[in-house]
Length: 508
Image (cartoon, rainbow, N blue to C red; front, side):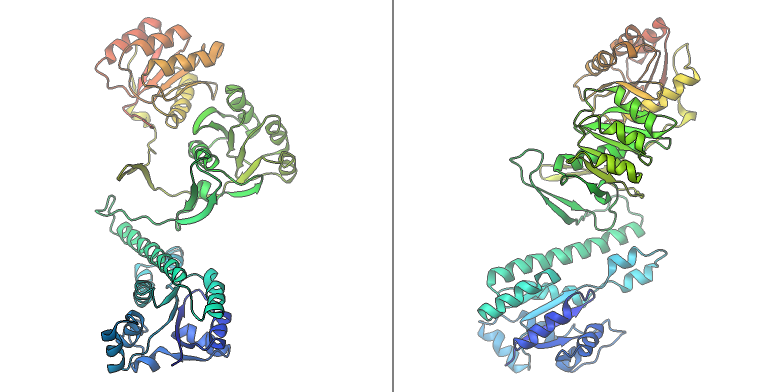
């Protein structure tokens, strides 16, 4: 009895060559629909599934492989006497190889103006059933869902007469990953259509983009996975030059891109260890970069710079004056790119357009915290001036700028800003006065005439008192502390203004 291979693929890359090699190795090919026609046209010896089942394809192809003569051939345990007896009684022949990839559901839902009905029609039923059946019976059946594995299977059959069990076991696991991804895409699409924000079940499936040399530290193994549908931001950056991105590169670059999105005007963001060390806006990208650099010329060394305008020659010449890990921008003038490439190891990334709202996820041991991303903006109508003195228009502009930056600084966070640039950033302390002192110390003389943004309220008046002492002229903070009156009193005593936003921006 000839061995049998069932082939039914949507993505037909390499399938004709693979089927011909199976023919040469003595396999009888069974197929359906478009795959059958393609193989027949290319002179592969192939029979239709309907010839095996004795039943025609019906309901526009919805039912064709859901039949005992297919699933019996896939699921029979070959060294189980009862199973073999059942095969003989019902005229079922074993199927040894299954080659399937599924209806293009992902490609369908990515099409513009796709209808729900069209998406539903591209949910494969028979394919996943056969994949799961073959994978479950991996001791006897080889399941292939990826053309990359075709050559391995052919070589093992040539060498051993069959695939090795360890190979079939690996391919079975890969097959369940294939259906898991497919089902998660369908599930999340339908959840979205039902407008369910936090469903009873969270199902995520990501595709591996690359293995990494190591993780956050050299002793940690790591890999990078991409969202198969909503790849954007760092996941979709085009690398134009430099060494391969590391785990920390990707993490830091993501932080830079998220902060960069806060600004529509020309902006430059410098990031170190996921925290901004210099941020600025200006009338052009060159001036924005210079201001961001001058914010903290020490910490920017070895950091990441993200820009939201095309990099010109003048800006490129400034960028190469110091050691940077990465430069990110939406585009680069040709000559500017050549200037940057003089730095052999500098990673140059082109940031593609596009952004979609998604969950913010925090992994904890044994669980997952899921929340909306912190994308709220200031509502001018809800701002409350709580001091006797109100901020000037110029101070108000800097307060808005600082408020955008402090949202992206690890809590407890304080940001000092002046003239559209950060001058001091206090990061990730366990109380609020320490980051305030840190930011004022970093700013030095620049603190005088600057404004202060805090990601959360002041539990004591010490922050307002330190601001007055440091020469800061205006404060923006959420308010809501039981000691708000003491902070307001300290600000009034120092003759500075303070605004309450009612919005907290914790980032842990």
